Amino acid sequence: MPCVEATDPAAADKDAEPFVEVDPTGRYGRYGDLLGAGAVKKVYRAFDQEEGIEVAWNQVRFRSFSEDRAMMDRIFAEVRLLRELRHENIIALYRVWMDSERSTLNFITEVCTSGDLREYRKRHRHVSLKALKKWSRQILMGLDYLHNHDPCIIHRDLNCSNVFINGNIGQVKIGDLGLAAIVGKSHAAHSILGTPEFMAPELYEEEYTELVDIYSFGMCVLEMVTLEIPYSECDSVAKIYRKVTAGVRPAAIGKVRDPEVRAFIERCLAKPRARPSASELLKDTFFSGLDDDENPPPPSLAATEHCNPPSAPEMSGLRLD
Image (tube, rainbow, N blue to C red; front, side):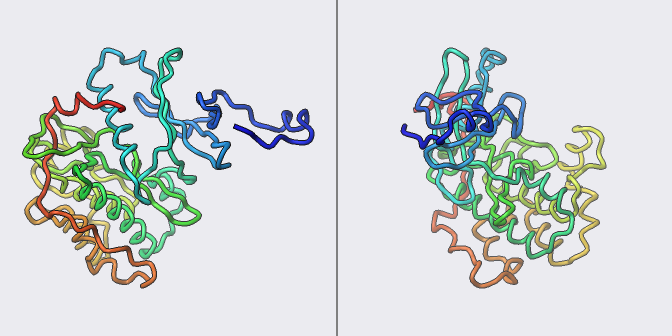
């Protein structure tokens, strides 16, 4: 790939930040600094030399869990999902490859310059309700796309740390699809997955539809409004489980003073039969105060039938190609 070289290479090398690693095509270069790290995946700052933009270099080292088939399936599922998805409110995947010498899976995704929504909200404590509505609507637009995708996709781990933002333009994107379920017909779930504070009661019962994401979305709105992670009054997962399954709301909801906001959150946290879809919530009067030129496009016209998550054997068959 031809690059424009500096007129004084020595001076350029002195000032340039060196790449730690370059992809096989020579297009993407990885820097040493981390953007984030999880249990199995590290995300580094990187650069697309062809487009001249910063990107995220996601790297998974297989040595640490090579015997964990379920974890391997989750990682490949995320990559396969990202390759298929194209939406302005979903993190985009640009390239993926295996590095057999280093025993790593690498994939390049777009990067949101301001990090995840949880940390961004903590840094900016004075935010208008209008701004919160804009963020919320964009999350719903991403969910609407996932839920009306063919096949339907359930995120299953939506929370504010899995939503990312470009703060300079207020653009919000859903990421971290490693626990997402690709949905077929009439399949039941056989596992409990997600972040306990954001999990819908029916997730614990292992019989659920894409509406579990709406419950999690409601908890995201609650966190954005109160700056408090739901059920932070509980000191163990067991206590969270007991409250969630008993239908006890998190203490943070008592801090929501605006009746319109509280009613909207309660709609999202309702029992499954009464819980609206993402398409329905996008039409909610909660968003009617936003500027007319910012109204989202009509929700996708797809079957309104709820989809059920796949069985574990189906998830294990996922491949990159």
